[in-house]
Image 1: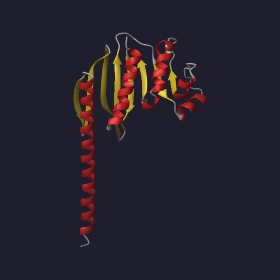
Image 2 (image 1 turned 180 degrees about the horizontal axis):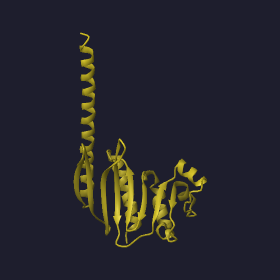
Image 3 (image 1 turned 90 degrees about the horizontal axis):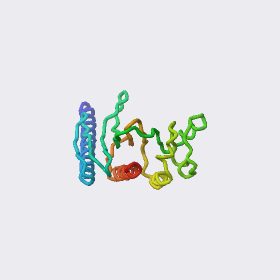
Image 4 (image 1 turned 60 degrees about the horizontal axis):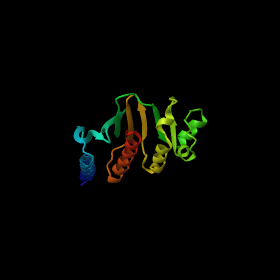
Length: 198
């Protein structure tokens, strides 16, 4: 009887691990379906790949005349792994370079410590976002219209965006496992397409 206790404990732990694995598998299957629906809605090509037991989506095509990509990749750091979801616009020519972050307590602290952010003289924008750029043409991108688009959608902005050379990227650190996350991500895609369409 004494040896039955550890055996039952091992069986219980094994069952719990199995159920967690099955739940994660179901979430990723649902996520793939959400990505396929998004691809169909926007007439994008869709493909998927596997990283260990995680299914990752990739989409590409055009929106409003812009070449775009949406893809997931696995970021590893030591023993930690995290899915990153990225939206990109691919341009033919170099663009005004910048980094845009949602304002956080850490960012406010950085500003007090001397990190320089671009002030756009729009209190509502400057209160919600931190913009870094050394390009004097930054105001050509962040027009009043584009600032207002970002202000109106600040509740959907959960990542960071940047332009480097010919690539714009909006990065969300995480998998879009729930429909509400995909809806927020899609809303930000619409904002950035609106900002850059011809």
